[in-house]
Length: 464
Image 1 (cartoon, one colour):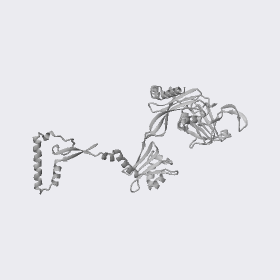
Image 2: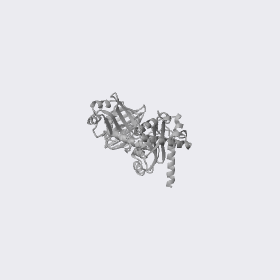
Image 3: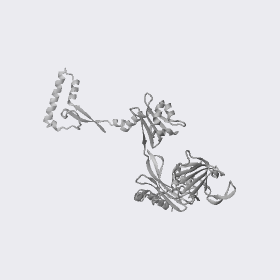
Image 4: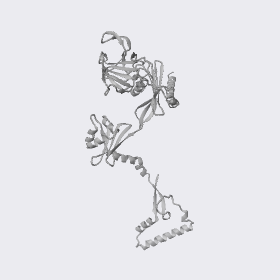
């Protein structure tokens, strides 16, 4: 039930009474006076003093307390059931939303074409496109995304919203001085950790599918263990893997998979473990249970999930030259156009056509190491001699240029100018957890590593 306080003030009530009573009716006035006198006499006889009576409720008011009576009046529940605060807000929001024009971006659309179709001036388009770094993202709008526009009666843009993804909205607003300002609104997704596992019978992807693990998680798993396991060469039937990762939800609906928190891979009987850790400075990476980095300074395979067609050898029959000669690298057969990644951080020392290599890239990694990528179909945009590249960055695409019978990547690894087998060479490691953070590391990763161990133990018991 709800209650509404009503104040009856003596001076206003008296005025109301005088308005309702005909002042010329002296008989009626006399009858009222007689009734009031009788009531007063009865109260005195019963010992009822006015001072002993208290109002049901009191409320602050500008009228003096002696001149008012304050009552509580019970109102019907219907008022609450018709208008709740949330429903009121929804009604107002619906009215507000109806003023917005929602545009679904189509192929070939640009900010200028969208604004033009909405009757917004080219001057406004120029102002917003060059406003700041945030609005520069409007140059890269994609089909399927949405832009919301709110204009005034003269067709001038008042506000704009651009939603590049479900967790982020770019908001642009016209200020009182007619300039524009923008802000990025970030929306947090709810993260829930889940455990999954798989046993490889034919392939990693098939095992993941049976374990209800998405391809996104499989690719991340391969990236984490890719420095120790060559997923093109080392995978064996019976290999096992388990993973703890976040599933991200919004409003109770799963949006996508999140980051891997901990993982274990048993390859040919050898156990590899990894856990995600963020140090007090905010730097984050994957480490084993002892704080040693999972990353190496180099990737063993520059092409993901490719088949090895020819190994490192001092004597190999060359299919094009039809003679025996050494093969100082590893060939990865893959579909033409498959991306080729830089094996490690370094500087491009050569990019172009080089003899039997065909289109090739040479990367210098510090003073000691050089990697070579041959038989390419083409190069990544903007790649040139002297440019620095990061590990895993796409530098080119698989092809069959030079002396090649079909599309594949020829990959070489050189140490101090000497060719080494990329599959077996001992790779330098990345930095481990700083000694001063080891205690923090153990405290913050114990839960996820324990989850892996607990689930492994439980599953092992259930299989016996």
